[in-house]
Length: 216
Length: 216
DNA sequence: GTCTATATGATGATAGAC
DNA sequence: GTCTATCATCATATAGAC
Image (cartoon, rainbow over all chains, first blue to last red; front, side, top):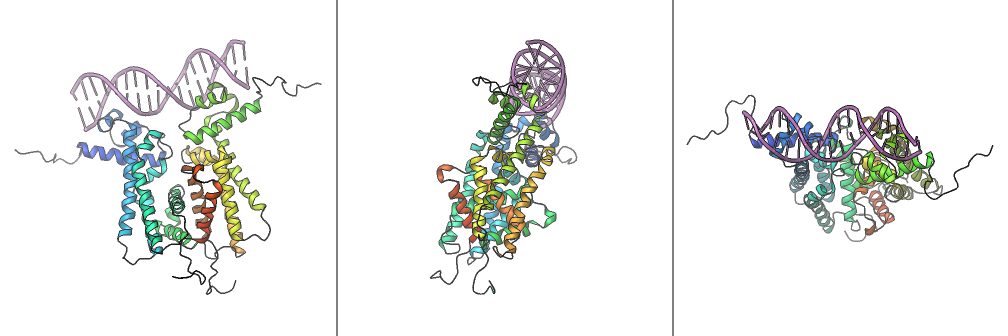
């Protein structure tokens, strides 16, 4: 009746299928982010995960299966992070607060929290078409979340009435994700970057010509 | 003294070193854009260029040398396209016209005119670090062009005085380049997309709260 | 200039021992 | 669950004939 809950000698091989699987995914996400999809061999993943290349096939049927899981988890992490942050806003929050919050949460996942999210952005354009197709649903769900967020905000008068929402979403997500290629924490943290982006997208580049601005 | 200006029988092999070289570059740029850097073998490039893989080495010393040329030409094309369009503006042009013109010219090169430009955007994140380094100067020159364009405009009062120009440039270029991944001409041409982007970046998302807007 | 042939190495995946 | 060994394929690059 006594089932061996788990081996108590914790030192060397903490193993178990689930732990190994998670370790492989973690390692692969990091390597994909750093070196791209084609640039990372299964041998390299196995080495960093402390096993031989052949052993990976106990956990995953192919490199494509492995990468699909990483892609999906990456999107889900951002989606969840943004949705939770937005959900914590007070009911009366304005359009600017909404935008700032969503931008910051997206950038936090991408630039600081999740190798899965950054791997997704980094390699989505590099994977075989078949893999891209398989990972589309999760991606589209996140797109839809933004579209609904923006549509509801505009409906409540919190955004310009004439803003093209699809374009807004594409510009915003595109710009946020592109920051992965050049962001350096040393130049100012994620919060600072998110603030600059929100300023720009909220106010635009047109000189403030309002009545209180002073001289023209 | 009579030099054979070029072979007059134009039918089959129009050859000549320069023509072959250009043909290889054209084919490679298109394939890199379509399938990524690692996804395109020299065999595939050679096949589409109508020769054998080994023959490429008469024209280029390595795959890396080949791709560096493509990357640089891609940036130079966009840079030149934007600079010329901006240069054609009347002297008194305002900030909005400046922005619209630059955005449109960048998108035109990227989405319609040049496989080199789109290949650059597509594969810059996939190439070996050494190659990236070699192609940095041309890229930085284009960044500098934008920085100076924006700085001068802001200096003349054509843009918000408090806009962070580096952030502006990074957001803008990032968003424009990202459109390569989803742009479909069928949904409306480059001009339409450029117009939407310019609207958004010029006016921002804040509801127009000016005195002439009507009801709040 | 382009060909053929080949050197050399890495890759994703499989089979069977333990 | 992980190992070792190996297969078949593909890659970049080179050498020498034509």
